Length: 342
Ligand SMILES: [Mn+2]
Image: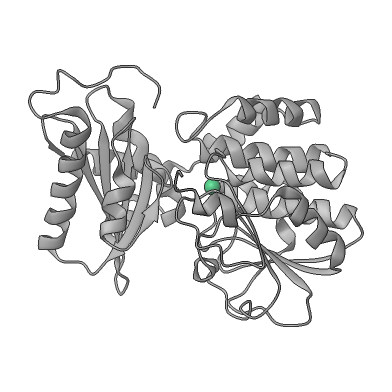
């Protein structure tokens, strides 16, 4: 029999609905340093719970990303490191394990785990896990439909932002007919794709442009331009007048060329472990590299943290080069796919 343990132990959407109906006071959260899918899924779920008359508290370890701040409900997110007070159930989205929430006070409670990251540890009393979803927002949509909650323009906008950003504007991840079917429903319900795309991708500060200039100027290219290595640090950010928020997504820039098949981005800040982000196209599996260093993610988008030494950086780069060569064959890159789906 095919190994599908995760599918067997994963619950169905009906189990999530029963758990929601059976409880009254909810904590809704997602992961540290939330992205559009984390916050979009979190707030959409909270709005749906409120429509059912539930008591809901939104808690996050870090503030929501700028791209979500203009949407209704986001200002209700409490930023805290511990969950206090009385609650009956916690719905945790986008977290492969409980520690990914960055919150204490959740273990021991009734937890509903909704996620699409490969490697999810199924830590909840209810685990709605589906790695074939392009975004957690796709799963939240399914839950909201199953709950028979009316899809308002507000809920639809949050879920659209979740899918739009997690797929990098429909560039990567397991984008399927279901993804577009969900987006069709969201658009019918009042999500406006052009306005939300502007909101998601065109709201940066000038500091970001300056960071891009310096960062690309220092870019290192390996394996006949098939691997790009980028680095960001506090000094570069300060010089550019940029914040860490301004650097979101910059890891994808080299992939806009036909040559580059994988990207390594080292983000360092004083007093913190080195954060390594990996991106790739097609069959180049950067998740396997991340897992080897204790991290995780998806085939085309993964990450991990590392104690920063130059030697370790070199090892990471070598492993990504090896992953590209394994997927595309050694040599001058003649065999690489061009313009195909990624
Ligand atoms: Mn996601």
